[in-house]
Amino acid sequence: MKNITLLFFFLITIFGYSQVIDILPKDEYGKVHFSKIISSNELSQEETYNKSKVFFINNFNSGKDVIQLEDKNNSVIIGKGNTPIEIQSGKYKFSGLMSFSIKIESKDNKCKVDIYNIVYNNDSPAEIFFNQETEKNYKKANGKAKTIMENYRDQTLEKVAFLESKLTEEFNKKNEDW
Image (cartoon, rainbow, N blue to C red):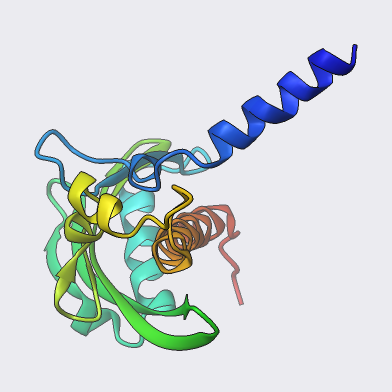
């Protein structure tokens, strides 16, 4: 029984130190690309499109500045946004910026959200941070990734999940007649 318990903890440790780069999804070209289908709570295509537009307006400083393309006929909105991130490097924390493109395609009862073109601090695409060569350079002698890489990964996952949750929240809001 002790051997099974030790084996279990050993396997968890091995899998816990798996590569940082494999956590973020990539497209066929190797670029970091998040894609998710979100239920729009039985809304029509037009209602889903309109609520997607409201999402941009409510979650960015200026929806007008963020939205790059509005195609009502095809129910597609594409925007560019950014969000602050906090990165730990050793014992120091510094503020950074994560910029991205977001595309929302609306249909009846659902929409497809793509978040891509992720760039950190206005000059480093996510693909540069999360590739085999960079991962090798950012490993400590014990084989574990440095905290800075884990911070970029975790902040990226957190910010993408936040955007997806805000869009879902927008779809679940009831229209209020005042």
